[in-house]
Length: 126
Image (cartoon, rainbow, N blue to C red):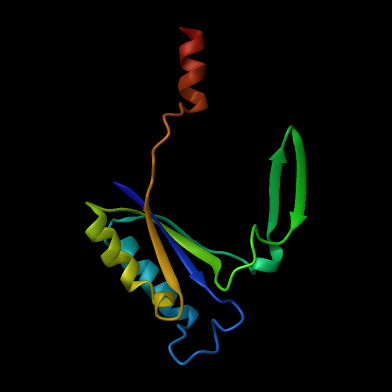
């Protein structure tokens, strides 16, 4: 089953705390998860100041600079993993170095049944 591990931290203190991970440690852990065959994707995000939020209300779109809400911790990155169960996903999450100075939210992915464009094209030619 797929699980999304959302990594949150206070980006203003992320690299200044005694337990703050170095980039090399984060990369080594990502490589370890990749080698285990459990990694689907993982990325770090740019600063929360680069975020843009889109809302649509009553057919009107509004676009604002910044994150959706002001919070103490910001979304810093993610790991998308294929784990046997929640317990295995939690073990992967607890190894993420940034968990020492922030938090990791683990959520099962609800798979959408969307056909790829190549399948749709094949069906239209049949």
